[in-house]
Amino acid sequence: MKIEICKRYIQILGIISVLSFSNLVFAETVVHNERVIQQDIQKKQEIAKAEQEKRKKEELEHQKAEEERRRKEELEQKRIQEEKRKKEELEHKKAQDEKQRLERENKEKAEKRRLEELYNEQTPTEKQEKQVQSKISPKEKQQNNKIIQNQKSSARTPTSDSNKSKIQTMYWEVPLSPTATLSSKQEKIKKVCDRVNAKYDEMKNITYYSPKRISPDPIALYPYIEINHTNKTLRLVYKSTYIGTHSYAINRGIDVQMGDARWIYYHTVIVRADNNLYEIRYNLQRQHREVISESPMIQGGIFGYSGSTSVYEGYTEIMDQNAFEIFKAVANAKEVKMRFAGDNRQIDKKMSKKLKEIHEEIWKIFNILQNE
Image 1 (cartoon, rainbow, N blue to C red):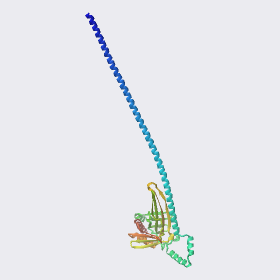
Image 2 (image 1 turned 180 degrees about the vertical axis):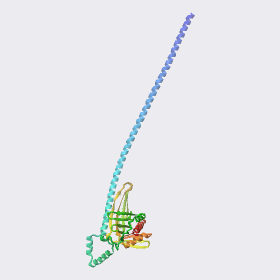
Image 3 (image 1 turned 135 degrees about the horizontal axis):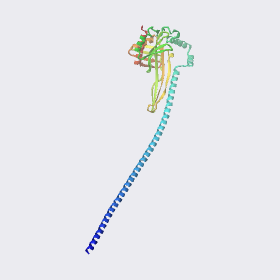
Image 4 (image 1 turned 90 degrees about the horizontal axis):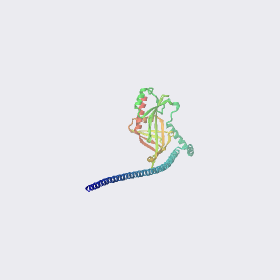
């Protein structure tokens, strides 16, 4: 009986052990399964999160791409509008430039016509002279003829071709010194030449000692030397010039005009060298006159438009004794003043330092050439 009970007890213990082991295995299986499930859930969550982040990234990239596209479209539209605006401004500016250019040309033509009319008024034609002469009485004609004859006898006339090789009594034309062409003298001349150039004309066989550059302001009086190697003669020439300039400029609708382009028809040059007064009289019929009209300078923008019209008149004559004395006085004076006088207008000007130095250099060259 006890043995049977023990067997039963052992069986029960075995059953309990089996059941306990089964429960342990089951528990471990459950835990394992739960862990696997949690890992699966965690993995799915990670995958879902990665997909969500990927979607957000793609959306962000798409948004950036869309913004960049819109920005480029806006920039392109702005560029097109800017080009259109600039094109319209350029066309408007060209139209304004063309309009102002035409206005400037019309002003220039009108100014040129005015000057020509003024010149024609001051210079009568043969027909006008005949009409005037027809109204003059015989007695007045006789008096006028006497005045004309006196003027012709006192006026300086050009040297005739037949007398080029002779010494002129009214002109400062002298035989060339035999030593004038020596290299030693040429070296001396080079040393004093600062504002004077020596130029040889092989066609005429003449050497000129003349100023490098002269800009009348508005009047100028200067000498130069001609050496004729064919006739072995030296001439001193005096040149007087006047330039009146009318300048204009237009900038942003503002019209600025300066200067006066009118002839003075001068026939007398008065020179004061220090305290000595001299006078040169010219024959007005031998005066050279010219209208110099420069085309308008079209610059555009902030520089605007500018141009000028000038009138030129002058005399180029070989020196006589009186002119030579003036030349000598100017070359040795400390201060020189000039007056270019016509019948109705005159211009006074102090001789510039440059013109004074030109006189001095020509005077030195003349003395080097003539001294033995």
